[in-house]
Image 1: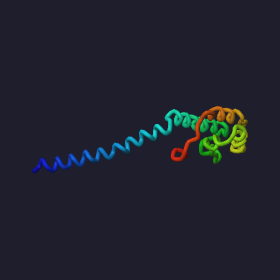
Image 2: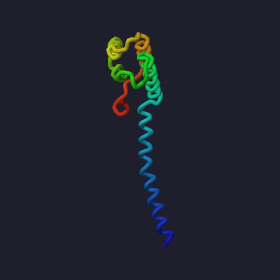
Image 3: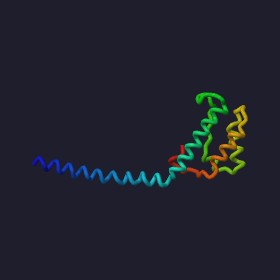
Image 4: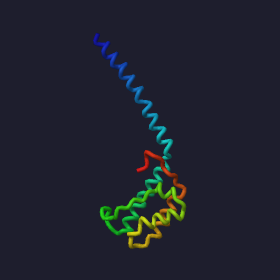
Length: 120
């Protein structure tokens, strides 16, 4: 009789493992939908923006004015619209910002807009 309960729990345990596999497969589909290379490129651009804002405003992160540069918003605009939007966002900056704007516009060329869940 002692062997029966262990056999029953073993069967239940195997059934639980089979239900976890589809969740794992869904994760695989997610990484296919969002190209890992594109995600890394976007992260690199965001880190570059952060570093450049520190240089432009010449201060610590806590002292940088409330400023959000939305890459997806920029991608929806035309070339000149992108430049105009960045100039609007950086109007409080006293330093020359043309190099930053040109650098950012160069970096986002060819970048695709992200959809829903991964957008911040």
